[in-house]
Amino acid sequence: MSATLLRTVPALRGALRAGAMKPAAALASTSFIRGKATLPDLPYDYAALEPYISGKIMELHHSKHHQTYVNGLNSALESIETAEGKGDFTQAASVAPLLNFHGGGHLNHSLFWENLAPASRDGGGEPAGELKKAIERDFGSLETFRKKTNTALAGIQGSGWAWLVKDKQSGTLGLVTRANQDPVTGTLEPLLGIDAWEHAYYLQYENRKAEYFDAIWNVINWKTVASRFEKS
Ligand SMILES: [Fe+2]
Image (cartoon, rainbow, N blue to C red; front, side):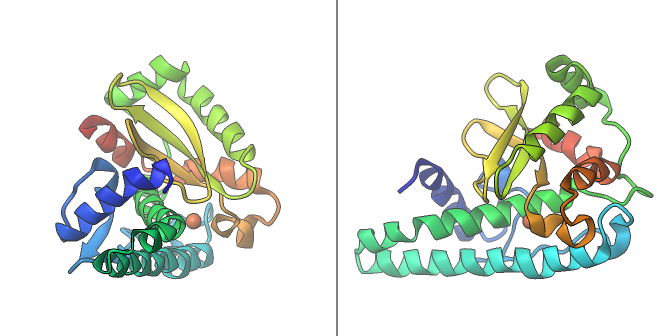
């Protein structure tokens, strides 16, 4: 069983046992009903992020891709429960990659939707308050942070994510990437994630993914990023 999974399983189990509770900060945005992970509603319409992210992309991304992670997570958890019931821990451990992939996909996308907002509402602009100070302290400026993030996103080989994270022990901000759907865990609190999977941009931007990475800053909801920063 991978180290990532060992950290993820107890949190997912805790969430399931607690219904819609919050066993870990990283799970604050995920939704579980009656022991099952469920697809969260978006706080805006699919077309609300246009022209930066098309309504068609948002519809597919949320209703198809995220739903697949939700279904896969529930299936993996059921398989583990069944294997545990039989005392077959080898079988339970064999589900580890699926749990990590679909559980991470559910966590990551649940955070991602909250990171976004229409440009006509809270999207775009700049962070304020303590988050602004922390970004300037740890990256030099917001512009430097944006450039470093876009460079990190462009450097992801295959599918993955870039995250602004807060080290819960030191309080400092950092920039990390994760492959596939690996979640941010341990002492790092994910504050802002940008999805670099092709499904997040290809219908609109095709092979011009750098344009997507530039455009998404127009719909970043800094208020939710600041909220996560202040709570963690
Ligand atoms: Fe995605």
